[in-house]
Structures are given as structure tokens and as C-alpha cells.
Image (cartoon, rainbow, N blue to C red):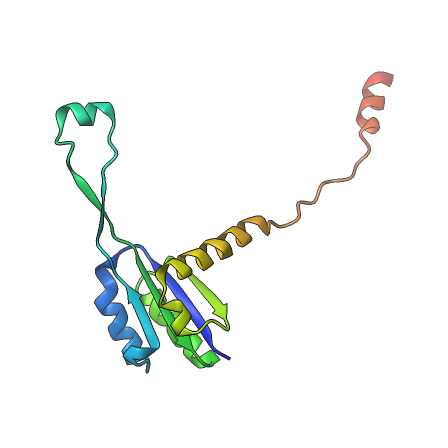
Length: 143
């Protein structure tokens, strides 16, 4: 059974350190994918910033996504430890997803989005206190 672990990181700054950590944990270069990209988006500013600053400023989308194929629990623990050392934001485990399927970044993003939504909707049950409301009112009325 193949499991693919996807890690979401806040920045691409640690990409090299992350790959070194994975290889030191015994993973081959062919066992993981690090999705790096440089996507510039226009910066959204207030009207005052638009009037007094250069409106052509760009910001970069600097997130990092990594997928790793694992075969056993020891590898899973090694991946989680390596991710934790590199400031992982969130880790997702996908059962029966091959690394070949994980090569498509849009597929990974869609799977992560569905998993995140399912975790939001799985809210814990809220318990309410069952008491008689009339008790407090009766004592106030009788007095």
C-alpha cells in the first residue's frame, strides 16, 4: 500500500534544507516532489497607497508544497520529523495515491482543498446543559 504525504510550507526558503533532510532520512530523489514556482501577483493596496506609491509593485506567492511516497510507518515518522524541522504548516496523508498521480500540482491542490473542507465540516458535537428554566422564575415570583 502506497501512501503519499503532502506537506504545506509557508515559504520556499527552506526547499534546499528540506530536500537535504529528506535525503538524509533515506529517501531517494525519485521518492519525492518539491513544487517550486515563482508566481507574481499585483499587490492590493489602499487608495492612499495607490496615490503616493508605485502601483506596479508586485508580491510573490512563495508557498512550498512537497509530496513524498512512503511505504511504512517508519518512513512516515521520518517524513513528519523532517517536515517539523522545516516549519511545516500542515501535513496531509493520502492512502493509495501514487507519486505518479501526485506529479500533477492541480490534482494535489484539489485533494488538499477537499481534505481541508472535510476537516472544517467535521465539527465536534456541542453539548447543551439540560436544566429546568421554571425553577429560577418560580422562586422569584413567590418572593
